[in-house]
Image 1 (cartoon, one colour):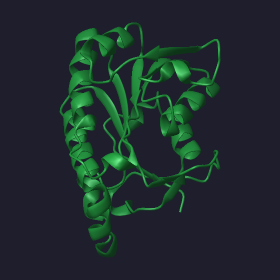
Image 2 (cartoon, rainbow, N blue to C red):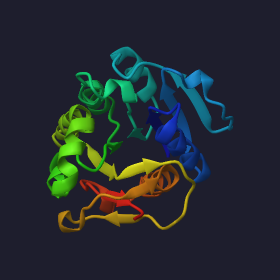
Image 3 (cartoon, rainbow, N blue to C red):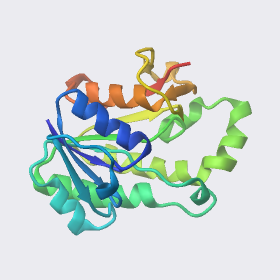
Image 4 (cartoon, helix red, strand yellow):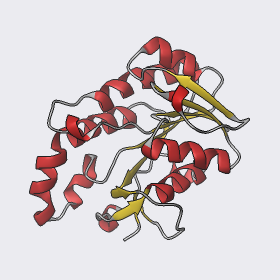
Length: 211
């Protein structure tokens, strides 16, 4: 596929770019700091742009087969009002529909949407204090995606840590299985990309952890 990765310049987004190239896809890496990505490949296009600017997103969608949305905020933003996830998705979804790009994969997190009910009672209060604003907006993001009518998958990783691909990540599909855990960015990226063309994943909201 020719895939647009949104939020591609660092962290998990950059790992997704590397995994997509490694699995044979062509990548358009979209981020404000895309030009600073220290990675070169003949199937990589660096595309500077703002996920909240419709003109940037419209241009970035031209010719692609699908989108992997991996947005993030800095730690200092966690205690401020957050609407990046829902606002960027509100820009992206109508443009995907109008341009006929059907496949959307989004990475949110364990604790967003209906997975919030699976947070243990002892984790719930500190989770809400630290991440409540971000995850309330991730929940709004998920609602927009589910209502879009696109061929979507929403991945919900547990606590992200640095690390390469271990091959030991667990994909928890059923709500009864959902639980928090630790998982490397490498494992999440590899699984997100490997299931990009998996039609069985359309309309699914898997949680992914290692332990």
